[in-house]
Every structure is written in structure tokens, then in C-alpha cells.
Length: 520
Image 1 (spheres, helix red, strand yellow):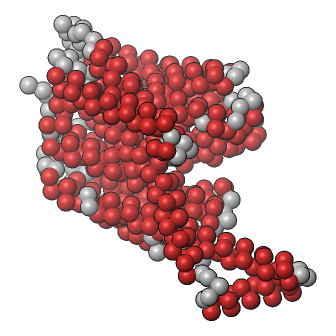
Image 2: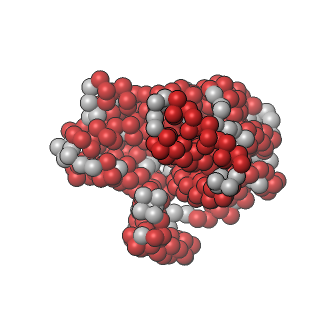
């Protein structure tokens, strides 16, 4: 039975609310990238291998993935403000404990707590923003919120590297404490539960929670460790795959029948929301997949340092940073579906541009596609979030944003795992193909080897050693060309993923611009 409605909240400038939720979201997103660069230092300090240290990332992601879809249900039981305060406080405290961790097992435990507390921050923030602003300003609000999503990953590796090099890896966790304290104070001062939000005192769906833990936990570990364990060549991954299918399949059946489900899947009856969530899953796949590919290609093939690769990727973040506020003003004035189509086309164009790269590319060759992708993502993220949730009843907004963010994260995890596997397998295919044409019987191969031998002999190397080095150098060239062709293939695949999404925009309803309706 529901308790009485919450007292009417006082009138507060919605931009103060935006700053409050932005601070907590910024902290959570920053933490997902700031730790990565410190893994070797964490491993060395805690007497662990690098593979063992990666469990500090996996444990966080698993806990985050389990709690994220439950956020709407938890907000209904505890109240949105109380849950947000609990999440921010828990995340801040866990960050401090991570910094104090005396051993790897303790660090992993604290990371689980941190991930669980961080799981609800993004959907709660989105739900608060979408109903705190009038319809004509929701695009601007989401653009402001999205800036934090864009800036935090840009700053994360820089801040993490600087803190680790100049102080200690422990400071990548301590840095969250002042941000967390600020977020707690702002949340307490400016965020209140809306009058319609009732704290539900219904029964707890223990079966649903259990299936969610098994299904999402297994899926996240499988995606995170699949490449490392050789995917389905590993019994460990096979077991995780079976558990994920059984757990998530059982969860869907259970939640469709449960009287009080942990995850309300009825939101997918809204066509715009269903299509928008599928599109956001694809956006997560392409965004995070390409984010992994760019530095790998730059460092492994082109000889860039980590710092140089980071600087080269900077135009993408800056394009999104400057473009999102502009898009925020357009949302509500221009059909959001047109903005989405423009964003999909720009991002696809960026992917296709990179698919024609060769080993001779330089910084300015990367600049154009990265700017196009950054602008395209700005045109996608804000209108997609707005139009997908435009007609969701306010009472279901927390649940809807939870699933929306969950699917983006699943898309990201699948994207990261898939592009690495695709690139490796396409590289093997190209090596086999090129190897068939680079043979001793080929006149061009003979001429190339002869030229290389003369070069090595000219450096004072004897003929036998020169011949060995010439063959090794030629084989290295084959591997490099095969690797570049494999990157071309994967970027082309990412471009086509966005193009085939375009027809789905016709299935989305034109936003009415009236804001989230009340449920009946």
C-alpha cells in the first residue's frame, strides 16, 4: 500500500537542480575512466598481476549493471531524493575506502559498493531533469547534463595519469570525495520529491531480483572477460553465457507476469521509447567501440604515445562540448527526428572516412572525422533522450530512464568486446590473403627483398643476416597492412550500423512538446 503523497516542494530555479544532479553524474562518469590508467600502479602497489587488477574494473561494472535497472523500483520504495542522497553518500564513502584499501580483495569489495551506489546516479539525474524543466527547455537541460557525460571521460585519463604520476593511485579515488560532498549538499538543498511520487510499500519481487543479479552479473563478466578468455573456447565463458541467457530470459518472463515487478517492462509498449532505447543501444555500441579503436590504431600502428593519442582524440570531445548547447536550443524548435537523422548521417560519414585511412595518415587526417563524430553525437544524444521519454508518464520516468541507461551501457559493453574481436579476426583474414600474394615467386616480392638486403648490407650486416632481416621486415609490413585493413573493415561496419538505423526514425512519433504526462 502506498503512503501519502509527499509535501509539495518549494519553487526552485531548475538550473540549480541541474547543477545538483550534474555534480553527482560528473563524479560517477569521471570514475569510470580515471581508474583505467592507474591499473599497472594498483597492481604493483598491491602485489597483484595486471589481470588480477582488472577485477577492480569488472567488479564495479557488474554491481553498476545490476543496480541500474532497479533504480526506478528503488526510488518508488525509498523516495527519489532519499535514494539519490544514499547513492551519492555511499559512492563518496566507498571512494574514500578504495583509497585506503590495504589489499586487492578489499579494493574489489569497495569497488562493488562504489559501483552499486553509482548505478542509480545517471537515471535518477535524468528523471529529475526531465520533469524539472518546462517542455520548451528540456532540450537545454539535457544538453547541460550531457556536457558532464562528455567532459568527464575527456578529463578522466588526464586527471588519473597526473594524480598517479605525481602523488599516488589512491588519489584517483580521493578526488571523488570533495565532488561527492558538494553533490550531497546541493542535493539536500535543491532536490525534492514531486507531489505525485509515492513511496510504495508493496511486496518485494525476490525472484526478479535474483534473476537480475544472475543474468546481468553473468552478462557483464562475460563481456568484460570474453576477449581475454578466448570467448567460447573457454568453459568459464560458456558457463557465464548459459547463466546470462537463463537469468535474463527468466527475468523477462517473470517481470511480465509479476504483480509488482522490479523492472516495469510495460514502458516498451510506448513505440517511441522502444525505438529510442534500441537506437541508444546502437549509439553506445558505436561510441564506445570507436573510442577503443582510435587509440589502439594510433598507438599500435602509427607509433603514437598514449599522450599523443589522447590529444589526437581531443577534437571529438570538443566538438560535442560546443555542439550540444546549440542542439539543446534547437530541441523543441526543430523536429527532433530530423536532428537525429543529421546526427546519424554525420557519425556514419566519420566512420566511413576512417575506413579509407592508410598507414600514412597524420593528425589532421584524424581531425575531420573526429569533429564530425563529435558533432554527430551531439545531434544524437540530446534529441534521442528527449524524444524517447517525451510521452512517458511521470510516475514511470525513473523506471524508463533506468532501462534507457542500462541499454546504452549494454551496447557499450558489447561494442567494446565486439570491435576488438572483429578487428583481430579480420586481421587474420587479411594476413592470410596478403601472405598468399607475397611469395618468393612474385617479381615484386623479389625486388622488395633485394632492396631491403642491400639496405641492411649497406649498414655493415653480413649477407645471411641481411636476408633474415629482410624477410622479417617484409613480414612486419604484411602484418601492418593487414592490421590497417582490419581497422578499415570495423570502422566501415560501424558506419553501416548507423545508416541502417535511419528507417527506424519513421517509427518514432513526433514529440508533442508537452512534457511527460501523468499516468492514468
